[in-house]
Length: 136
Image: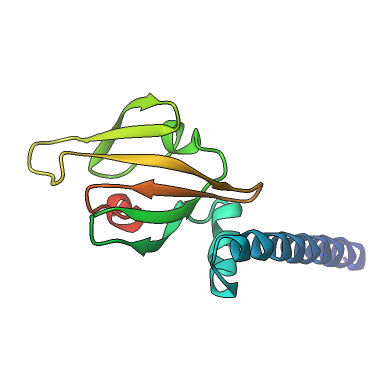
């Protein structure tokens, strides 16, 4: 029984050290792009696939910026928004359309920006959408 606890303790220490490393590296990248320490727990959730992403800011023109999975094919292959379906991809832009005619807006895009690192990527959405609204 004691050996099991020792193995679990070692695994926990390794996980904590790795999370600290990812946090420090993420902070450096976040700082480069004008964001701070408050985003680190959310970035860790994205990194460990506990979250699809989170909105950083929304602008008056209806676009929003969010941090999401570093692999953009995630939003094409495995991410399933509730009221939308994958439509097409053109370069770094992924297109979604509504599953029914009642859903507003009828379509939106996710566009990968040039601001990314190993742990996360920064994306843009349009038509007044945010990652949280679309996932509901």
